[in-house]
Length: 178
Image (cartoon, rainbow, N blue to C red; front, side, top):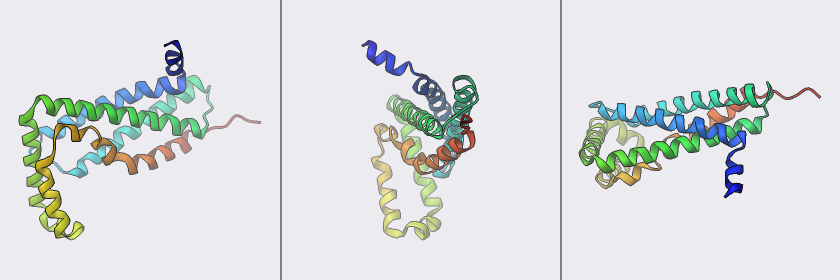
């Protein structure tokens, strides 16, 4: 058991885990805000990437200032970024699952709002995806369950967060002089 505690006690893991918990809570609160709106779309989830980017940058800055003593390797930035993102996305997903599990009327509201958004933007959706894919996505809305929200955060943010993590790691890197 002490080996496990020692493993998680390293600053390269402990600091991003704390910032990841913060990111998960912030993204979940934003998710609750979007659920309270009468109209939302999948593009509103793009702000999650912004929240994650800001918190990853803060974690990298904190690590560079307090642990690296002003120096920071790119691999540290990438490691910190991925740990923050994975922790935050998992926490946000599980909090969303719990929210919809204990509030079935909120899940019904979510499905109705999502369906209305798809029907309202039918022309653009058919133009982008094609009629067959549009009808498939429309029918899949009724299959949404609370457990499907656990990995939604990964799906929505994966590609954009990779770019953000790499850019943040490049910006904060500073090697020790030889």
